[in-house]
Amino acid sequence: MGNSTASLDMSVAGIAAKVNQGLRIGRDEARWLWENASDVELCSMASSVRNRFHAPGSCTYMVMRIINYTNVCVAQCDYCAFYKLPSQDGGYVLSHNEVFAKLDELLALGGDLAAFNGGFNPHLPLRYYCELFAAIRARYGDSLEFYALTIAEFMYLADHAKLSYAEAATRLKDAGVRWITGGGSEILTEEFRARHSKFKYTVAQYFDAQRAIVDVGLKTTATMVIGFDESIDERLEHLERTRNFQKETGGLASFLCWTFKPYFTQIGGIEISTAEYLRHLALSRIFLDNIPRIRTSVLTQNEKALEGLKYGADDFDLPIEDEVTQKAGATISLDFERILDYARTLGFKPEYRHVSLGHAPNRTVEPALNG
Image (cartoon, rainbow, N blue to C red; front, side, top):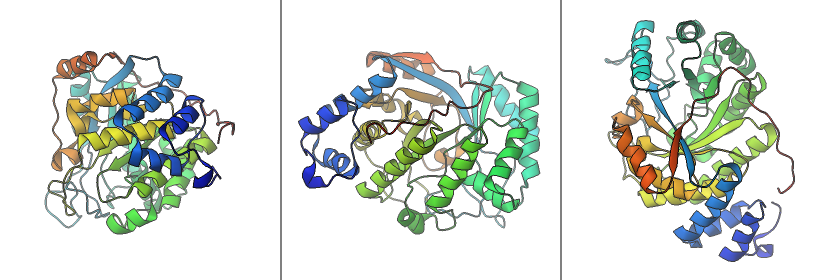
């Protein structure tokens, strides 16, 4: 990736040849594709990378629920319509029985994955999380899996408990946790965080925490949210940091990108088009050539997200709840067959994917063959 722009073949044919040979593109080439390649050309290159990992025409999905266990948060991100400050009315923390009721409903609807997402709640000690997750593991065993916290919440929890990231991750692992997802990333540049989430952690701290999570044997993922005011260069910095982390650790199971819902948020704005989202999804698949699974977001794009299967994605989930994005304007449909039928009309055969249970991630660190 040390080549100058002048030494690169900045043409669709030249970059496509590189991609089809399994060679890695750099940020300059990715920016050129974003500005010059057609949708058809992006789809072709993205499909080429996708087919290294998955059979053409195949795709997988999950039925899942995001459980917002608390809405109390002190981060004060200007793009969030969900949070309440500790001093405000309307704050809540779910009891174990309330969480169990949501999990029982998930199982009744055919799902087996829950994800926990709340906020930086200063009133919740580490003990609350360990007791909750241990109770879930004891009650449900391997009949369902759960993503315990986002990395951003995990970082706050560790600092609040005055523990290192490794110590906090070990405590959660001992409580039955197997996954801590890459949520809370949004756009991983310091400039973006200074503009919109100044009370969140730095990019360097974010990856320090994720590295500790991987090192103790927990599984994790990469996420990204687009459609704020970020530039293409900020998007590419996020993708490059993600690719580099995967090269160093091999710990990322998947990459999920979704779109910012601006309604009822402080920042406001206009939602980006599905066409822009799909182009970004394709560029992500091309650029993130060392992450096996690229997921498209039904939560924020509804059935239109399944067009992403033609743009390099291979996986999606059918959500039954996510109060955070619903508060900002997302809508959820439980008509799963209608959504799955749309995937079929696009030429894909969706198969249910059960999240792997009970073992450490396959941490095969990527060899530096084509960097």
